[in-house]
Image 1: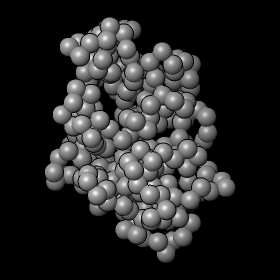
Image 2: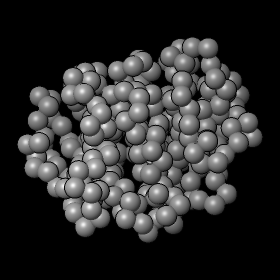
Image 3: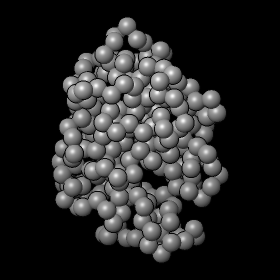
Length: 244
């Protein structure tokens, strides 16, 4: 919605998330942001695309979107890009002669640069462990204002834990009526608390109304799991209290 219908009600919810990310960018130099979830199906890729799209609405913004979910890559499909037109992330990791510039694709209609996942590796975990990935992300950090990385689910596979040391922070997507609390706690325990930027509560459809305030909320977490700051975006649902 942020990319194709930027003035829509739905896009406004992601614009609120963009606002918070921009604030953290200015105050803490948050630039490289991984988006993940406890399990598959919580909406992490949708959130990744819409966050990148919301950030890309600034005409002078330099946004790079990376598909690092090597087991279930979907970014190219959602954006209508041909994954075989250019080499992708896996190719650049396995072939050091490929530069960052040789694996990026500029979307023809959007202010967005993309690195697709590339060829499917036999061992995604081993590919992501390569020092070459850190080199690529460091270069991307210098060339772009924001680097948004779609990553695998945290609990299902260990891939995102490898990425944790290479990014500035994680946004965790939690599916309403879907993500068990125990899985969320397990996912949070897999990351250093300082790496957790916040949570996106996704898909709450209670009291569906375009006029109600957000139940899509993002929290900054403390070590013990309590909320240090709360910020909300408007979503289809009622406003719930911080204790729910």
